[in-house]
Length: 425
Image (cartoon, helix red, strand yellow):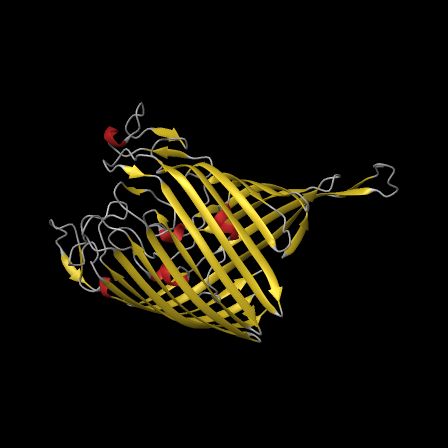
């Protein structure tokens, strides 16, 4: 990463308890990093066949077509700014901002720039680190996931080529909290005998300085807010409130075998959404993960479970009467010089009401990555995903998706082959 000096280095000559040496403090400096991905995908998706489009009225009648199987995709792209300084008492401080080109998921030009993480921090090597702002939850930061290589995994490059299912999800196998950049406070401990831990708290599910507009009707607006009005992020329309997240992790080595393991958990109060009559229940989620590595080989897996809806573990409330959902995945990677190989397999289940069949998903993949030069990788991978019993709502799964393709399918098979490149600095 490049370093740009933002200020001068100051030296504070202060005697402390008779100390004869000076304690140095450093003005903030900036490091710039980031990455860019470009991928070519071949997608054979049963949901893409016989898709019905059009308004159904003149001059735009319904007609049936098939989506093209080939596509180019600008993948994840970020510019990361890391500002770090050091106080005279030895504390490190600064802030991090990650700028991402996220507009490719919209109907616009795909060039919109927004923030991913944006937080300040204060850190001590003996007391730990506090982060303040938009950042992943503690459980997400410390989790041990299945091992994968560049560009491969159940929620990696493949999800960028998959259209949403009828319930609004693309993948069901994700880590706990799946990121979760809600504005929060986080504490991360130092490492003691291989162990460290962290806790975080977010008052709501929003991030940044947020003003949310209501829909066109007053019925969907919170009490006291007019139609098309604006309200702050403490609004009652966020489905999660008072989110607490925590995790403990171990990292060590035994006879040349590296071991990484973690346990994480989170809970949040469910907040009723004004635009729906569904009564929601509080969210809980748990995580277990393990990796063993040595001699170029890494094997491991993860198990996530709890009461939540949607594609991301612990990120959305679910209707009263629903039970636990879960996912698990295992993976193996082998690195031989600049060449890496990988494979994975995973399954996920989302609870449905009564005698209705549970939503299920199975996915597996194989791939390779080759490091052409420092920070420059080329990748190729193949994945297959099978979805069963897709509903029209993730939070309230009572109605199976239509048998046809206008709003998705009840069952879905997807084959995806990707070749691409990633440059990071």
